[in-house]
Amino acid sequence: MGTLMKTNARLATLTALLALSPGAFAADAFLFAGTGANGISQDLVLGLSNGSTVTLTTGQALFTPGTLNQGWWGLDNANFDANDSIYVGTLQPDPLDPVHLHRNFFTFSLAGITPGSIISAALRIHDVGISSGTFPMTYSLFDVTTDAGALNFNTGVNQAIYDDLGSGKRYAKQVVTSEPSGSYAIDLNDTALADLNAAAGRFFSLGGTLDTPVSAVTEPSVAALLGFGLAAAGLGQRRRRLLARTSDQHRQG
Image 1 (cartoon, helix red, strand yellow):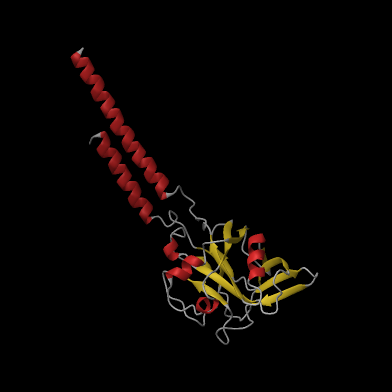
Image 2: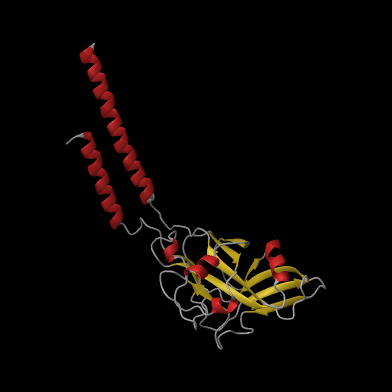
């Protein structure tokens, strides 16, 4: 068997073994799973210019009676309106694949808030549920342009709403180093403050997504190993060409 055939055979065997190895692929990566069932609302804590603090909740001004103004949208399975879980991430084998990545949202009523009066803001999550994956994970919050009513009627699948929850203006970027517990706070940046002041008196929504869910791979990645194998095959071909060229030169010399 020639060198190239041996290299390709080893590469094929390596690929087959990796496909059968349970540790060779990324594991689940998600935050806040199992939430919503207890009817626990999340807060938007606003610091005002007069020195006072106002706490708004996803349980105020409900779009669907009995269902909090929070939830998730995904592309791989349909949701239903009564589900107000704030699960974000994926239960699929490849958390980097956006097809399987769920994004969450939170909506608050800013009725009674004076425009220009908000000087600080934080999203405070009381129902942190359970998490899975390799920490740290990066959870980001974005602006939402989707109408609040349409956003909270989270039934079925909607590509436009899903995209909206993970793009646009970034309001926060939180590195989650371990499974959240207790009350989990995320401070919002100046961009969020400007948009909050502009939305005073109306509904305001935030979209959340895992930026790059971390792989739980404990072995070298499939891509790296395949790349190594392909590189070895390339080196084998290069070595044979060099030997052939040297042999020709000797015959001609």
